Length: 392
Image: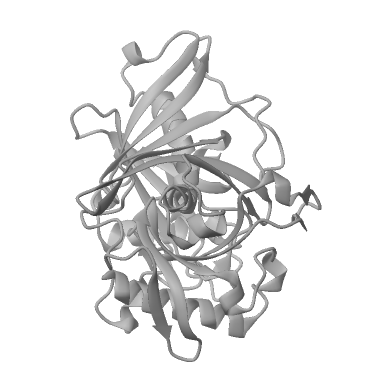
């Protein structure tokens, strides 16, 4: 029996923040995958190695975690005053789908550098030495991101001494600004409330802040669900009943936020919303055995992504944390002490992260102008990925 040979597709494997993903230029994809649809989804799944019933993604580029099962497609921007269009696909590990419903904040830090290296940014906007300001159109959520990419001798500077908890080695700092980060066209608080009572059958009625900023996120108090906020991955990810509880909270929150119209739809929308739990500051030991002092943080936050507790913090969830912290009365703000603030430093499983945000209330409606954080990015490998020619 004859078999279709493999095809090779230009690609770059990049770490951005605490995530990794396979980056493509749109024009390098096979023609049938240059448009949204089943062929594109099938191609990206095969590249990553999904769906994998073993949950390992051994036969692909994925790393068997939500942080490493990611794909990015970039092209010259179709939007005025933007340099590049950024489309993000979160590939499910053991199920046959790609979730296009949200952004990846961590990989956003790598978009500017990739766009420069692929000639997607006009050469006049790139200094010989200094910082290139790359204007990114986030196509999933239709928002603007500004990446400040360091340049040395006309090339992207990737090495440096900026340390990011959750990343082993230092690299160059990339400041990322998420402009008007409320997700979608609706209200930042889709229920109209800073705090709701969320009924979750089998769990109870929980206080919840449900916010669209960076990425739709449901915040609950750690104490209400039996946690102290200092948990690491092993405390939750091996507990099937705990993961089922969080998925139930996520599904019922998604319904209240208007992201789905029926609970059954939540399973096919795993990337959004996120669910996170917050607690006041406390001393704890991070996953790298680094001691985190309560005096060095404003609150603790733990967040789940694609059904598992994240090893650090998703960049988009950090935007949600920063924005919610800036609004008096949210659960995030209350856990941080309830004061007005323009920045917050929170503890997560790998350490700490600072994020700044600006929010204002006009005519009873909260809006956010931007959220800012520093990440880093580094190319790990570049060349081609190969997949069987009949897999898409």
